[in-house]
Amino acid sequence: MAQKQNQNKIVTKKHLARDEREKRQLKVIMAVTITVLVIVLGLLAYGLIDSYIIKPNKVVASVGEVKITAGEFQKNVKYSRLNQINQAYSYYQYAQMFGEMGSSFLTTSQQIVAQLSDSVSFGSQVLDQMIDDVLIREEAQKLGITVSAEEVFKEMMTAFEFFPDGTPVPTAIPTNPAEPTLSSTQIALLQFTDTPTPMPTATSTPEGWSLPTNTPNPTVEAVESTAELVDSEPTEEPTQTPTVTPYTTQGYAKALDNYINQVRQFGFKKDDLYKLFEMNLLRQKVSEKITEDLEPTQEQVWARHILVETEEEAKEIIERLESGEEWNLIASEKSIDSSNAQNGGDLGWFGRGAMVSEFEEAAFSLEIAEISAPIQTSFGWHIIQLIGKGNNPLDSNEFQTIKDQTFNMWLTDLRSSRSDIELAENWQEFVPSEPQVPSDFVSAIYGAQ
Image 1 (cartoon, rainbow, N blue to C red):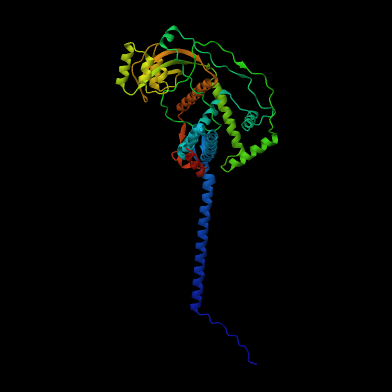
Image 2 (tube, rainbow, N blue to C red):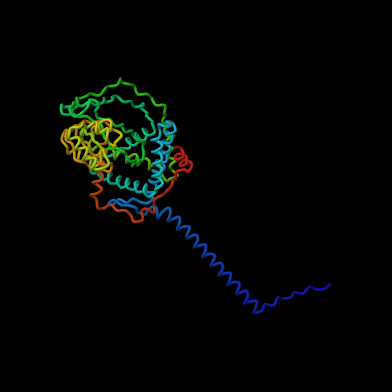
């Protein structure tokens, strides 16, 4: 039997050199791989840290020592955009319900969507609101105004239409103001058809961001009021027993949780909703304090006008009036304000802020029966005659408008007086554009015309 002989492998220097070279190459490959992995992981970590820690904590605006961070700003913008989208959808539904009569609802829905398309402009509005909130909080502290947790919870329940003590009912409705008593001078100026033209009563907007409208008005707007009024008492309604709401405590809690779950995807949590309601109540209380000395009256004038396109036409009309021609006949013949030309150009009673500034200044400077020189505005050339002037009572809606205007002016002045309000140069980089308006909804509202 042949014996198996072991032969030792001969290792030469060449073999050793190759093994050493392969080991070095493997080490290099491993080092490069590890380095690449470290870099990739570092970039991922930095991206996460930048997205969730660094960027959210960057300051987009400051009011004194108070900083508004990008995270807070983005959260508020997203929540506001969501509310506006829901509001636009509600107006679209109203338009569908009322058909041709609902065209104004459709227009409002389109205006909201158009605003949302300009994300930077929309973000600017939200940032301004957040700055105002800081100012209001500071002033509330100075005035000793606070909001309790009980008030916040009650306001939240009301927003979700949960009334544990029964649905509240109105107890009194104020009657319409009495008609003004005209002097003999005013009666001589007017024909029997000349009466102050009432304006439509403004409706309240849904809760959320109010939408400014810039729709041009072809006529000078007027607000109805009265002068030298007889005092009137509110008309009492029969006392009604509050009805028990079918909304249970458990049902309210479920509705609230469902809502929180809907907005949570945009970073808005239950605590944020609480702070939102708290801020709204604080704003209301500060507004009430700032406007507490206002009386429900306003200096107003009652005027009529003839509107033409050129100054030469206006001068010719004044000459005709001075020669004794009747105002009403000239107005029906020459005035291009079709809304009231057949009624002598009657604008009714209006206060300051209702008209363009040039028209307002001229009207308030006139005496009763006096006719103005030609007044130019963006609408054309006006000849104005004053019919009445007085300090007139306001209804609840008009008075609330005056209080809102007063508070907003106070807030604007307060903001102008501060030199410690700063915006970051790159704040626009942090404006989110989501949630987006669904494309099918955009097609629906513009295809509904």
